[in-house]
Image (cartoon, rainbow, N blue to C red):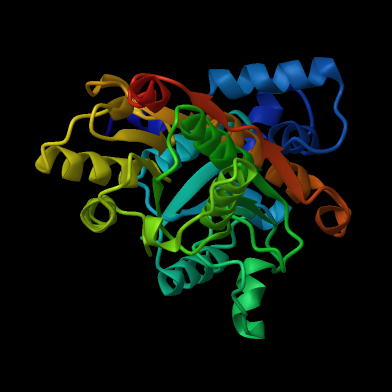
Length: 357
């Protein structure tokens, strides 16, 4: 005969076992574990005590069939290797765990077709909600079959990037203002010939370019197209390529502004290869503060976003929508939650006004 203790250890604890030991009905146990209905505080304490004693693990499949919830959120981002997205995903996972949700992460590599396939996969898994940083441009025209995955039956919240033709909530940073303030700072330092490196044809990059141009115009400097490079995936390689092109084709440039942290990394590599000195030969400003920007010599002036707040608010709002009984709440409620961008001034920008005296 086998050891009876092993049989006991391997026995699957059921709601019936908990109800018997706690001296309550199975329905009461179900309400406590499933977090629905009303239960007296005394009964709840009894159930939770027994749950802990018996080391009860809920059957998530059975629960999802009963509640029509999987307690799972899908997160779709352009590139998880981008520190900006990885920080947001970490915030989403942390906040989701506190609320009893797990997260499935999908990486699109800034590819719109891959993004659609990710969404289809998440829909097939019957998840409760989706958080997405879409790679689609603001002027994208979706056919009906594709649109249902961007604005369909599964509640969806957008982060960082907007699709103006959809009604879903978007949680993002004021990209226009952040780019405006950074450009204005460079102008205030005496720079007039400022190159800018962007990537991905998304609402985010367009708004940053708009802020850059508006700041120049407000200081009587006409924006010049030859100072602007617009990529497809905002990679380190694009940052290297565009920096080389701008500096070689425009020797009058005195400053560069790179619009995400991977572009910043590529920009720094090319500047180093060209043996240029920051800020003596060239002033630089980047977007999305990250560790490298703080430890290079000299430390970089950067626009920063509150990634923790973006991620936390996005999942909290999504769960509110999931739990709402009003199917129109997401359409009729707020459509945008916008946080401020902040300029962190360090040592990577020279004051050319002093040089001209």
